[in-house]
Amino acid sequence: MHWDKVSVIGVGLLGGSLGMALRRKGLARRVVGYVRRRQAVGECCRAGAVDEATLDLGEAVAGADLVVLCTPLGQMLPLALAMRGALKRGAVVTDVGSVKGPVVKELEPLIRRAGAEFIGSHPMAGNERTGVGAAHPDLFEGAVTVLTPTARTSGRALREARRLWAALGARVLEMSPDRHDQLVSRSSHLPHVVAAALAALVLASGRRKEQRELCASGFRDTTRVASGSPEMWRDIALANRRHLDRALCELVRELEAVRRWLAAGDGNALYKFFQVAKERRDAWCRGRGALSSPE
Image 1 (spheres, rainbow, N blue to C red):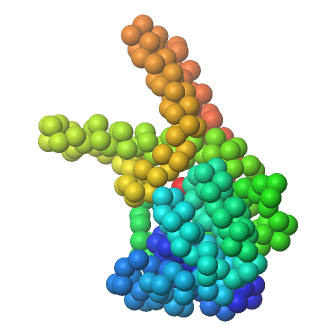
Image 2 (image 1 turned 90 degrees about the vertical axis):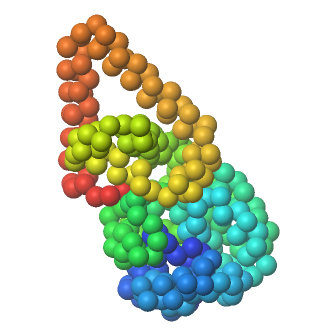
Image 3 (image 1 turned 60 degrees about the vertical axis):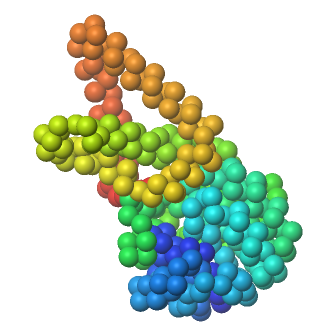
């Protein structure tokens, strides 16, 4: 058993899966969840995500060795401000946010002043579903989790975060917060924007009925992530807008090239475009061994 008490702040898909995994693997004597709705207290306990759930943030974090923020990005700073007085001295605080730069910048000094330690984490796991009902204890098995230590991160906090995600079956990488945000702007955030744009465009209310009937598995698979939480993805897009804007510009350049080839009837260029894309994706799939459902 690694921890006496772990606090999970926000018990949805990621927080619920984290709690389930901690409990199933016997990594914590108690897993306590903080939720915002009274109804969710019973839901979390019945799902097996936590040992206890509470609407009281101070109660949730009091005495915890490890606190994991599993809420949308926009809620993290207010929650950190509210819970800092209840944090155990020396506790390690981390998060599961998809953007690291702003989170680390805001939370690291705040948590340090409260006598605890913060390190950013991002488990690259999840799907388009939300809520504890979608949680699963194997969610992090085989997934990449990025840790984003800074020059002020203590060795103990880094070890504790590594121990957490490794114990849950994740493959742990380390990089700077900004490097992380630059890379996920292309691999995670850009696909969500594209999926949302496709869903909004193709399924617009003014389209003929036949349009929806002709949306088959290719459209379904390409737009799957557009069913994700609008609140969460609004926060992600805004928090990483600098890198996401650059990624969108890169994509627009690719699409403009396709338009030029179409206008010119350039079959060779179009063939090469599709060939290169196929080769790169096939190689990526082979490298992963099997496709899972990363964030």
